[in-house]
Length: 178
Image (cartoon, rainbow, N blue to C red):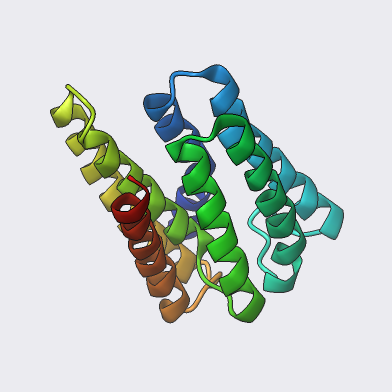
């Protein structure tokens, strides 16, 4: 029962990404460019390498991350907005870390989504909904940290550093890009 719950928690992350971007972006082309296409690239790369969708082997993550970094440069030229820059900076940072060490990309990504929601607070008239959603994501981040540990996908340090790097890099993006 616990294992099924932990697996369920791990599988929800891509859907949270898409939900957050639907809230943040009201342009279907940007939504497809920043969420759907990267998910397809990641899943195709995993399938070609014979890996699960979360690509446990850090060495197998490098090629899809390079592809996504190149793709990120292209979408930055096409859209030249906050969200495409966030995408590119985060992919490049994850790629650099992955060259040397494995972190939890689930925890990194959820921390990024939380920071995006906090960024949106500055521009939204619906503060209560965004705060509620942010608190829900924080709870989900904690559950995800537990699930990644329970499923033995990561060590405690990998999970904590994934979360901390996600918050730190996106805080710096908010501070320096915005």
